[in-house]
Every structure is written in C-alpha cells, then in structure tokens.
Amino acid sequence: MVLPALVLLAAVLIWGVLAAAAQIRCVDAARVGARAAARGEADAVDLARAAAPPGARVRVALAADTVRVDVDAPCAAPGGLGGLVAVRVGAAAVAAREDVLAGVAEGGGGPWPVEASGRS
Image (cartoon, rainbow, N blue to C red):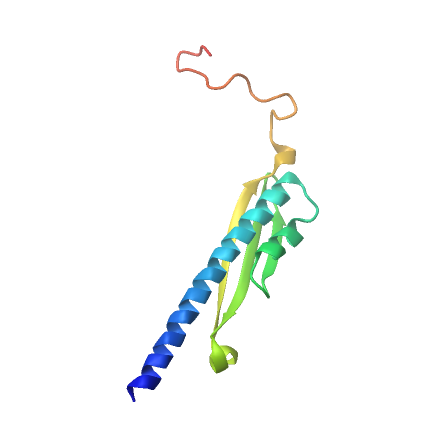
C-alpha cells in the first residue's frame, strides 16, 4: 500500500520540476522575443518560439513606444495522467522600442553622467 503512494508522490515531484523548467523556458523565450521585437527584427516570433518549450504559443503586441511578448505553454503530467491533468505556464516581457527612442539619431541626450552641479 505504501509503494503506490510513493510512486505517485515521485510522479508529482517530477511533474513539479518539469513545470518549473517549462516556466523558466517561457521567461527566457519572452525576453528573447521582446529584445528582438524592440530592435525591429522581423523574426522575433520565430526566435521566441525556438527558445520556448514545445507547444508554446507566442504573441507579440506593439504599442506606441513598447513591445510586449507573451509566451505560454502546456505542461502535461507525466505518464498516463498527461491527458487528464495539465497546467499552463507562461511569462511576459516588455521592452522599449528602439525605433522610437528620442535622441538616438542625434547621438543621445548629452554627456553622461551629469553631476548634480550641472557640470560634466
């Protein structure tokens, strides 16, 4: 009677580790996608999808001065429970769009760092 309970406990613990790993991959994929989209790269979704777990959904939303990338993926339970029990893990990342940053074309906003007295 104890052995089936231990097997079930081990399966749940393994599932927890797999779900945590999928969550970390979603965070990384959202960051990669947001950086690429902020730079204006056309393949931002493909880069994010390559870093995401299998079966992940990637969405990119452009705003006036930012870009947001959402990544979510299913994480099924191990073994025969995979079809019955699953959770979705996900992450989002936001980055400033580089094509709309003020002062970039002119070489920035002046010397850096500026001291409190106004001298540089």
